[in-house]
Image 1 (cartoon, one colour):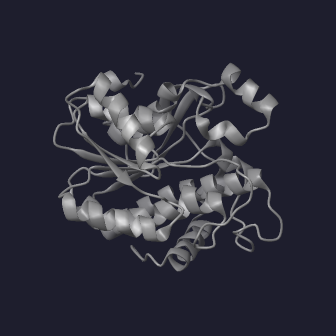
Image 2 (cartoon, helix red, strand yellow):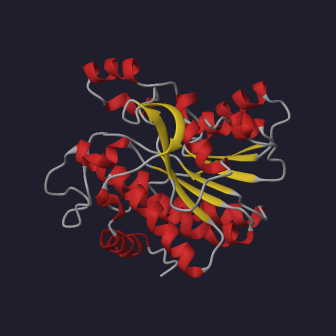
Length: 298
């Protein structure tokens, strides 16, 4: 039976954080959660864009509960400030959706000295999850959804040069960041289960979707994507399935069903063998704790 958002009951009383929720997959995820009655926190780098997204949601669902909070995932200071502010004002966190990302930009380093894609796509989310885990633990039925990509097949971890200081390959750097997100989701699930936690860690990917992520793509490739891809609304469905599906278990990975996971209805999918390598996962976790200074489930 195909999963649809219509199968999901009302989510009144529940709270969700969605990073990068002002546009694309994040905005479409927020729209659907708000429609179901969930309190939605738009965690965005640009508050003006977040406010515009909030107004778009309220125009469609006037009774929606939507908050805007600033979060720059490429800044560990911003991540810490966001987590401190959120936990001071909220008593529960049902869904942490680690959605925000950048794709194949020119080379740059974050303020903490990390390659920009590794910082924004992965390390910021690793730190955010650790800082919010106590609140997730207090909330029955909570889940962490980490966004990966088909691009996890483009690269493994370059542990000898994580920041690509010896030569930047934007495609491999993006692949590394999304591979890290998927390895993290699996390892987080293993560690949560080992600790006896009831929090679920799951992963999702949107297939090929029409979003602003492709702004740094070569022009010809950008023109090709709409021919094989799907809308941002459809691309958000695997995330929503991972967050709300009744049959979801810790360690599941959700993506589109058809055309080699590029488009279609959301289902549970597989990933490459390297992404499930526990030695890689253990090493990545240790490196992530060292780089971010956020230590948890160790």
